[in-house]
Figure 1 (spheres, each protein chain N blue to C red):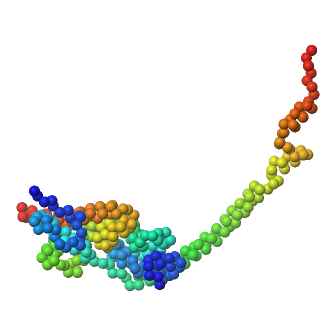
Figure 2 (figure 1 turned 135 degrees about the vertical axis):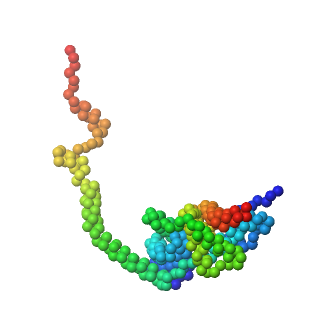
Figure 3 (figure 1 turned 90 degrees about the vertical axis):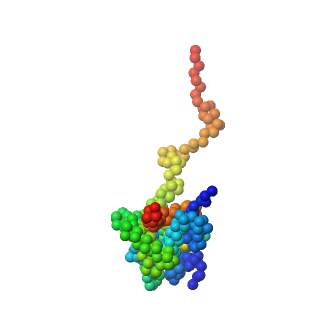
Length: 199
Length: 140
């Protein structure tokens, strides 16, 4: 079995059925998590991940062997996610609504717990992430994609730039803008009330 | 002189040490705690569980797609064979007409004249022809 990504691609193109299975094995975690963190909703993730890998297989001949396979697969995943979001919005079932006061209160509880203990339980983290998803839903589509790929999946700026077919500078701007907006939204939820009480 | 407040969008979520300014400035101290909270969520975002045998299933699906593509290709070729044959015959016929020597001007001229029509008129031929003309009558 070939070990490098390029050898696996070559072997797949030559008809080795196990080579593609190995490619899927290597990158399924990245694909699943990008879809989960970007689109949300565990029920759609598997179908979309399958769609991504079918696209990868069908367009493998167009893969430029000089670039990293990881960024190329991330690019196909990103485009599939963006298409899916557009589809969902067209069907008007997009549910990343703004946070209501109850959600805000819940975030405040988690924040208090975090600042006093410095850690949260696994369940709390999962619940908190649902709220974070809603906050991320307020970001622009591409800003959110840059943020997910860079901050949640840990891709390098260069890989994110290739995945989003843009420049590193543009990615840095998008990530920075996303952080700023998320920070501002969280501050509004957590600090504005507190300051008003103090004033 | 007052110090500038921190620009949180430029900080890395992996930074866990508070910047010195955050200790002195209450506003930045509060904002730093929010930033750390956000960073904690990002770093600990839950991951999706991969369903068992996912790679095997996708690989099988791809093989089926490959097989069905091969069948589709064979069917398409079968349907296109008469079209290709027609095109081949038409191209052959056109080529035959284009290179057939019987269609040249000289060959057509033979149908109407005994000798092939000679398009070359040399200077000698013209002078000789003029010599053969009857002399013009001169006036009184």
